[in-house]
Length: 117
Image (cartoon, rainbow, N blue to C red; front, side):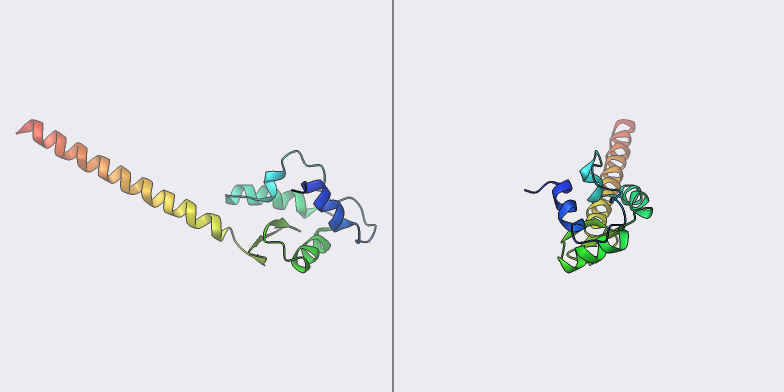
């Protein structure tokens, strides 16, 4: 697998000489594959001042990058997205946690009712 820096070097090799991409050499390559809105916002803050932001996104779209933050935009299945693939997992997990909490409360209610009788 290619490292993020190698991928970025390939992306920027054809770009105009406008400066270094803000993401090259970032210590956390996972930041470009966010699972939460706050992770996405962190990646977008880095991209916001990047001199090659627009070209980065254009190159990612041309290459049909499947996922990740490119030029400050989250791609999902090669298209701009809004954490859809991740949000569904988190929403499902939240719903399950609520169901589990209600079930635990119901068990507590039943158990406390059994001891009073």
